[in-house]
Length: 167
Image (cartoon, rainbow, N blue to C red; front, side, top):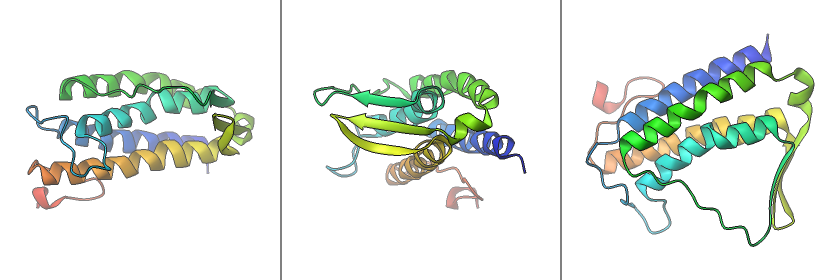
């Protein structure tokens, strides 16, 4: 089995499903909608999906570590509209696809680190980081977005078979 070929194919399948759920956000949805005080807003959650499939994926694939000082203030992407989030999502994919196809087997086995304020949060082989913190993370937040859509009475697309809205 060609690990890289299979991972690229999976990335393609999962990003296509993620795009479907981003497309399902109603055009008139209030992106500040928040189902719980500890939850991200709808816009922040949608923006987070673009971060992990684009910038975060590229950091994982091209850098050996991502390190921030303890006083680093991260300004998360919160889209102004559904169209903006879909555009940003689509914008990031081509470079990730190209980089995925060019990565060597040796590079997959190298460790990748995420350090914040001197504390190491991630120190694992790149292939594991890509799987856990790009792919699985994308699926996790995509499912959360599906719950938000359901709570807003919006149509939820199926990911691994038809949803209740498609039956």
